[in-house]
Image: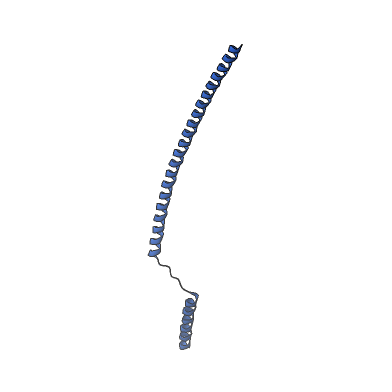
Length: 106
């Protein structure tokens, strides 16, 4: 009976060792899969970042070109900006002139 008990203990230990080994292997596989997924994700993110950077560069370049075109157009036809006071003054002068001309005629 003692031998049977000892044999049973040994069998249980072997079984436990095998279960532990299987668990370790499964854990290793899971870790490797997680690592691989993580690497794939990082690579994907990196690729996406590269694409985003390229797109941003193109957008910046296009924006600069548009800005250049706008600047050139602005240079071609300068805007005439006059203040209210200047406009009023010119109107007053014009009126004065017209009044004097009318006076002379009459």
